[in-house]
Image (cartoon, rainbow, N blue to C red; front, side, top):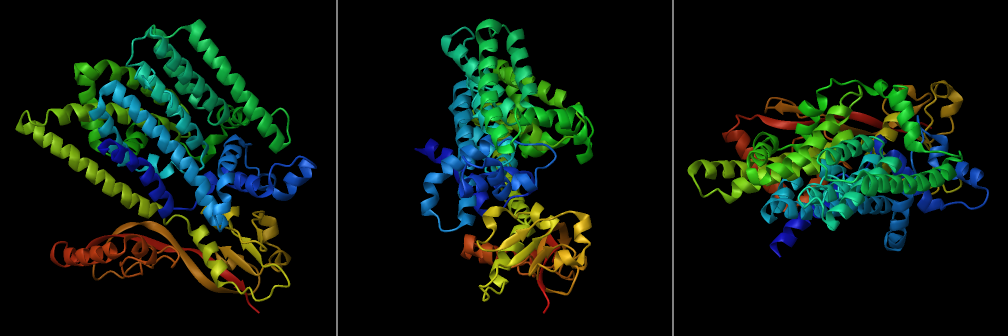
Length: 569
């Protein structure tokens, strides 16, 4: 029962993060908009091109390269049975994200069972504690990035007990099976089945969702071959061909239909555009060491994970072989991917659960020996303290991250402030670029209203363009041509700084944000969630400021981001 309660921590935290930060940003927009369009308009069977052009967001805003609809189709299908229980499209958006989040939570729990097999049940418990106290995996588990569709699949392939433990849900489920494989006898039938499943899932996830998984697949396959743990003829080729065939059948058929281009393989198009043609560099270039010195430490969050626990797992003779088998392919994957100039932490997110598994093995070894000496007890105490500190830091990051969606907050406020007494004509709203990038989705739009997301600079300079709008959400009101009045200003995250009694408080976020009231006190949303706990925290903070910190405090600062404009009469 205790282990069950511990396991529930992961899905509960995923849903808590979803509740606290329910909105999405531009990186997630394609899949969330596509899921909305499928749920609302269905999949057309007649006049397909005209129906898609009239109702689907991707036709008007296709982006630089086409992306796959496979994940959106699956999410829409899984969401449909529950729609009758919901009363608003905002709730539908949370449902869609919740389904994805629970899928990835299941992948992480499945990975935990592989850790049990590979390193023991104590290590499995420490895996949950370390994983749950991290921020990025839990926060992004429900976010509709292509990486998060691939993430779950990659984790299902790790249950080799670590031979195959690095490949188990296509990414997580694949790494799970690989983990199990690496902890099993190489020639057992079960190990062979897990290897095939892991390699199949990684291939499938790479073909459909994220092409960079091909590098991880190559690293894992090469390691297994060098260790004589896999058969090229009976495992690698059959698994690769099956994953390739089923992945291509799924993505080419689905995406050729929705994009009305045949044949279309979105991941191949994206790989050619970003990697071969080098367009990804336009989004920024990072040094080769970025993943090792910046991204992975941030993803693991707890410094003792990589400074103490992973080294212990490698030094301990009982966990050394399996830990090495997990780490080497992962490090090879990250090193190879570091050759590309454009880098983002989400590109290597798949390595976090396996790295955490190895750290859990080291933590378990230390924990079971805590009574041996004073040094062991102090190290175990430091480990517990580091987990608690990481959990506190993760919750702080959650609050800070929730302030990054002023567009969604502005749209919600507009729906409350707008004059809807005239029912003879629809309300026309212009959505500026920042609003669209920071939370506005079709799920949040009101029925009967007309929204425009035009970003063509030439059109925005014509006074006639602005005359048809009743309201506008813009970051710079002087860019809106004509006579407008500011109904409200919505604030967003502007950094963290040290404040004192003599420092004027930063301007508060909008009431919809609910982060504070402009005087450092918890706002509406915080009080609703924490109840009396928010008031207790306020009292504790005041005491600490008066008696400990000399009036100084670390403050999350906000600044004006979006103005809600109404046409002046």
